[in-house]
Image (cartoon, rainbow, N blue to C red; front, side, top):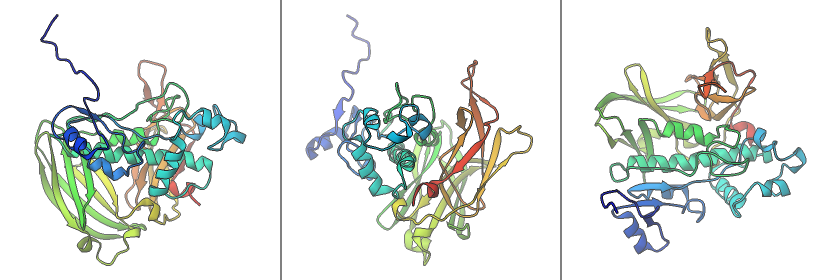
Length: 367
């Protein structure tokens, strides 16, 4: 028998137990970890920032597919969370209860069942974004993060980022952003915020950090720009800010901080940060504009808004994906996206016209 072959005897090698002493041992030095305190144990999303191992090889959170996918197995009269068909397509006994329980902590109440489907995806994406950023911020101690799961083998409520039909949930777009080579991550402290940059590139990166504070009507309340230098293959806290000095007398429930990292004309990452839970924010009714980019043959679109629009969801007549989706729109900061139609050829997706495009934001799904 060969004795020089690397072998990992188990996954996870370490577990996160409810016992505090075992917690300390599990987190102290080696091995991969599965963490399900968020979800099965109903621990808050914030615990992702504390329970971090050397390699996070499994964690996850459920959501439902979008309405189009649900209608493939449930007729209109069965569109209710506890209907026979919906329960048959939920194989986690506590799944529906857990989604509702977490939603009451973090998100506004959806106005109906169809809105609940959308909101469950926002909830799932928020959980996984929190986890992935925590793991990446803590490099080189933590050097791996694998969420459960990528896709589904049948149309069902699940932990997947893509449903059975290959339609991207909010999670898939969120992890696409969260796994960029360079990301911003903003963490709340006791009296302020810390801004981190994670650089997975093998070279030093210099750039410009822009901070802009807006009210929900797009009025700029504060602005600051400074140069930053990012070491190769690193994670670093590059700025700390005290909330009192930043917000002054402005209403924290109606303000958003936009942090951008640029290198020359290239936007490396941009992150909106809100000072209170989305459940406590009164979202304005926003008018969103969608304009075709000239010369793109109907494949690229620029979106704008008159007031803040959170979690903007673009859906298309054709089957495919957008270059970005489920993002926030701030007045005066337009976003341009491309549409890629699903292809049966050599390429999985080709840039093409999406047909009719529907644009909605979270405000459309709450009472």
